[in-house]
Length: 282
Image (cartoon, rainbow, N blue to C red; front, top):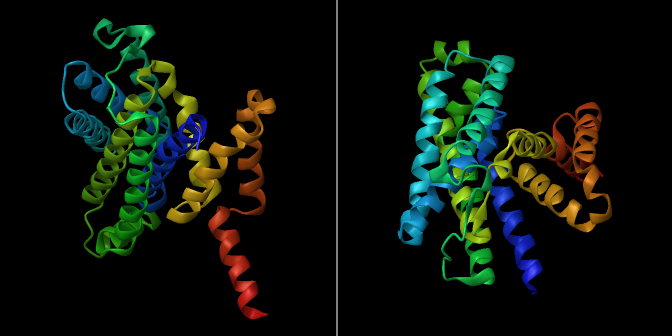
């Protein structure tokens, strides 16, 4: 494989991790978050800062996970009483606050970002394979959580908070756990991205990235890990395949969202279930 192919593989793996982690928050627990890129960026900046200070790769990545997870706890706690549109608007604000904050911090590179991030020593191929391994681990973890007692609690909260409370489920605790898990994984993806590119800027973690991730979740089918993975792969590879229309990427994403919401509200996962059902009845 060429260096370009490994680069595409790495970015695809990172987007899979981000989409799956957002699906834990939005798909499993019903918390509509449009600020996921902020936690992705927090992980990237924390890992880059620690790497520049001479920390090892595991320590830097762990720092990214902890910083993003801690930020997730804070945002999750502040959003406990918010639902639907109000939560979405709040998380949009978090996204803009994060970009505005790092742009004003000289110790984080301000507008110029952080360049010359120390290499992980794995090379392009090694970094891509590490990202792929982390993406596969994230998928496995998401499936495990969804099938566990925790996943049952998440789905109960996402379906109806009042009913969940009536059967003894702590809605606040489950919301915080979902936010913490999802944002921590996003922080890991950010740290891996920082090591892979060795250069990060604030605009790499802006609101449009959050919109792209939400598009992956919706198109894949909220709550479906495999559907979201498929959507993340497709929406990452399409701009590479059709580079001549790359400037219309957001237009394409918007169009796909409209089509999915109109004709396949359950996303790719729903289409897959329909196809399997029809094949089974033949």
